Amino acid sequence: MRILVTGSNGLLGRAVSRLLSTSGHNVVPLLRQGRPGGRGLRWDPDRGQIESTQLHNFDAVIHLAGENIAGRWSEEKKRRIRDSRVKATRTLCQALARRPTPPRVLVAASGVNYYGDRGEELLTEDSPPGEGFLPEVCVQWEAATQPAVEAGIRVVNLRFGMVLSTEGGALPKMLRPFRFGLGGPFGSGRQFMSWITLDDAVSIIRFAVEDEALQGPVNAVSPNPVPNREFARTLGAVLHRPALLPFPGFAARAVLGEMAEELLLSSIRAAPRRLEDAGYEFKWPDLRNALEAVLTREENV
Ligand SMILES: NC(=O)c1ccc[n+]([C@@H]2O[C@H](COP(=O)([O-])OP(=O)(O)OC[C@H]3O[C@@H](n4cnc5c(N)ncnc54)[C@H](OP(=O)(O)O)[C@@H]3O)[C@@H](O)[C@H]2O)c1
Image 1 (spheres, rainbow, N blue to C red):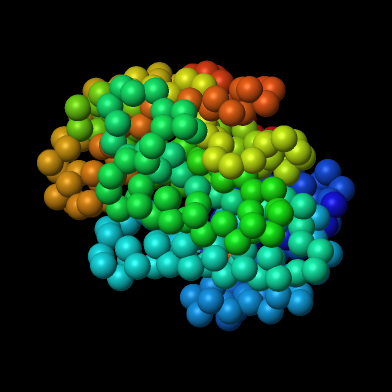
Image 2: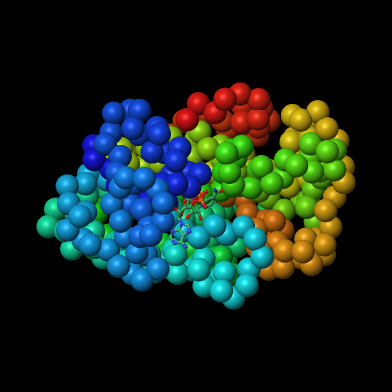
């Protein structure tokens, strides 16, 4: 297959491009204008510009681009988080819809942050969105794929949980205090964390490209979300370090502001209902095995 990938320099983009290229697919990156990134097609998502004629003859598109959400959220950072997802997705989907022969499938990233802070409620793809900045962004981000849906493209919106990898994302930042024996739960530690290994995340992207029955929102999370304190305990055990020092919620809010509230202290207990119904088999369903694999072995993606 000829597959277009946006966000190909990111954590998921690098891994999925590697996996698909080694499986014999022709992977073409769609890179941002003016940014380094080697060979590939170019677009300018900030300006909403894309040359739609260069998008001919693709069988599938994997859309992962978006401003990284880590860091303190100023108004400008929030604008970039929103626009790099909502505006950029609309630009891409409108261009794909204009093609005389559009791709058969678009696999587009979203996040379980769609659900917001929901305590112990088990969240499936049918659960309504939550409240807050990230839920609003996710709703608009998924809605921005509508031009592709209307053009008859099969669209899968993958709502990723926290992707576990030593190559990027949240885990490397969490590892530092744990390695010094200073790790522990965030806030009360009761908030649920929905997680997925990088290995499963990229297998799920490939599964979504290939499974012709899959469409719409799909939770890309392991079947075993855990409370944050259990995550901390398990990470400590795998690293053979204590994990007893809690990081108080008020301190997280003081240092990281709104981002701490929505990313670290929100409780999201998402279930991969659609993936399980579709027969996807998780390689790493259990947190302890997953962390051991991620931290002690070479990731095989
Ligand atoms: N990793 C996770 O835990 C996680 C969890 C939930 C959802 N997601 C979502 O999944 C997608 C991929 O995640 P990731 O971890 O691979 O992200 P990442 O490592 O931050 O990479 C995202 C890619 O997006 C592009 N990008 C960055 N800033 C941009 C901007 N202002 N405008 C347009 N494009 C921009 C860059 O690609 P180029 O330089 O190649 O253009 C970058 O490599 C993201 O949309 C993310 O929100 C990730």
